[in-house]
Length: 270
Length: 99
Image (tube, rainbow over the protein chains, first blue to last red):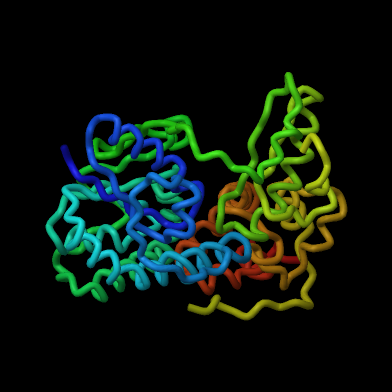
């Protein structure tokens, strides 16, 4: 029996696939605990999950487009969230004493704490985006991201000579994607496991009655942080899915679309 | 790092350059009016990395190897990339094509 600590950000699209991995580990007789923002994790994981909270702090939605959105993600969420959770995470690791950590790529503090305690850790990538070095053609942008991560490493008091990119465990990167999306064969430490689907706690707020029988359904979502970032994408998705014919019923997960092309959220069938 | 030269909002744009930008953006008719010298490629025209990569390729094909948008962007930091404008693109073109 091994004790696994899952370090996850307060983002639905990251927690849900990790929940499938946690369920499998539990079914195999291992102990699993989660750490992160309990007010977000608890509703997603249900009352029986062991959640070791790191405290709550509001983070702004990802703003802007393109490079501005990248800046917003890193400077508005990844870095401040890592700073905020570093100390509580350290205390949780000392108290709960996990054998292994599974660390989401958006919570680098988990990797820093694992390294400090000499614990094995794997990275968790719920999407393909971080795997393919999307900014490899822009070396100064990559250097900027590395600079932010090195700053976190230094802030954690870890030796500069031991620096590892906390998004990529040299031992194992579990990614819920596949070669069709990454485009090339992964390095040996990356396990592309495809989607991880598992039973989830019932959501009483979902309008189940609007799901029409006999339709093929398409779920469209831009993720928890996306904010206004996805308005144009959602509007284009509406138009594209209209071309798929009447037997397709799209389901949009968004606070609001912000475009006249999107139907109002009260309309049945969307 | 600032861009090499300030944009020149008043100068006319090369029509083929504007057409290429519109084409790679997959934009609807009428969108071309947004392609002005001081329009930022990222913040105003909302070109994504795929579209910028295609634009770089098309510029080299049409205007020659010195119209190298990829090399220009590779030398810029995040702030300069955010500030990159259509006027900066036009400055990449050979002199005979800038009118």
